[in-house]
Image 1 (tube, rainbow, N blue to C red):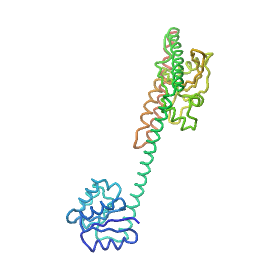
Image 2: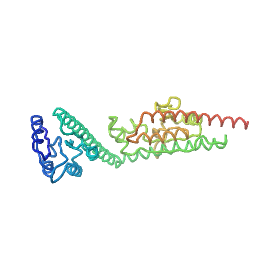
Image 3: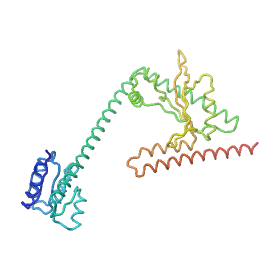
Image 4: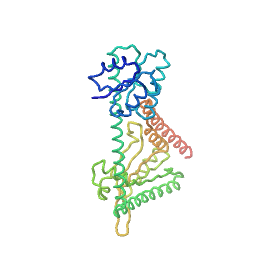
Length: 356
């Protein structure tokens, strides 16, 4: 049975509240603030609520609330102030200190019982939710720790180190071929089809987490077979047609195979994300053999990359008001950026035509 502490210096008030609540709760009484704090010190882990008068000897109700707050009890135990104070300032001060409710004397028994029940149920639900959140946070922390440990073991393995070397080689292979095309376009057409290339290699922890999340075995063979985004490049182009021209030239090279293509430019994601994704099988040349390695290549315009980078940062912001409205605004920005891309491409074409 849940325990309630009643603190009031007037004995008839204490007894009336005791008689009202006994049977539903275990009731402890205190005739002053110091005694109330002593009983809280003894029973705070099992106390469901505190009914508190304001005017008491030794320590008044305000002092009791402030001490409960200092000890961290207010977060777990609802305090219902039951007082004859009519001044709004007293009620406001109690709420500012963290009281759950304020009941004016004289009061109706049924009203007090319902207010106590509501406060107890509300805090119990909140405490259970906080406990679940804490448990989940501990579980996630432990999971991250295990992932890091397993990732370190993975990293230390010679076969894993060799595989990462092969992925790095594949990135260099694709990057070199793209730079050759860029140089050729610079000479033949007096312009460059892309502005920059960014490359990345998935970390051991990210690799382990993805294998585990998708239910794949944790092994070097499983990485090669099941993951297509360990090695990645992002190619930032000036105009949308440069994206398709470069992608087509890559795919047409006779020793590169296209495994998968996702065109989020023609078919954007629902949030407005646009990019062309290719999964390529690329040859690398080792000391004793040629080996094909999977590489993910993403093609974006400067404007698409600007939007994607900011959207990625903004979507991880917590406690954002009007989140749905922000999502719609981001989508509208993505649509505006698409229109801008094609307007700039049209201007380029007009300039090229005017030059003959």
